[in-house]
Length: 210
Image (cartoon, rainbow, N blue to C red; front, side):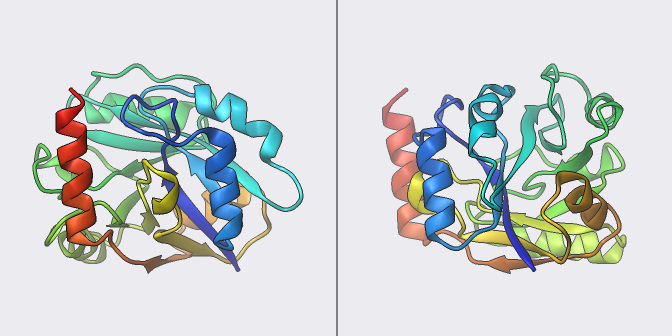
């Protein structure tokens, strides 16, 4: 059984503080079998991370796209995808590369609502470690009611957040196998959210740095 954190940011994201090498080291230290590098609107972190995809540790190519309707994670994506497109166009662009499109934290507090109604996604992120209050339960409820596959990811922006939430997949450690298992609903989610005081402190730090 593979334990994969499918939503990890590195210092290639403007709001993250973890170099790629540290992200990989942290994931290995926590017993993960791999991570998806999903930096905001760039694959620069992925290009750097490829050299760490060895010794049984899987680097899943990805990106978190700022669509016109909210954030969408693309897994299996190895080329940049323009931001600002509609959710439908973003999903199409991800699939053209053979990837899968995931509605990231679709009910997160403070985010633009309605993403899950804007396009047909391959999976819904139902456990995001940085999502507050009822965000995750609402996402799970939507996915279950609509029979959409579910995944989890930490949405880590710092080293210590990596692996707080992760996806369990029973398959070979290959990207194509992982994507197929997710697409067909053969994944389960585990983990927890970041403690509220810690998350609020990170929000304050982010606001102060602007």
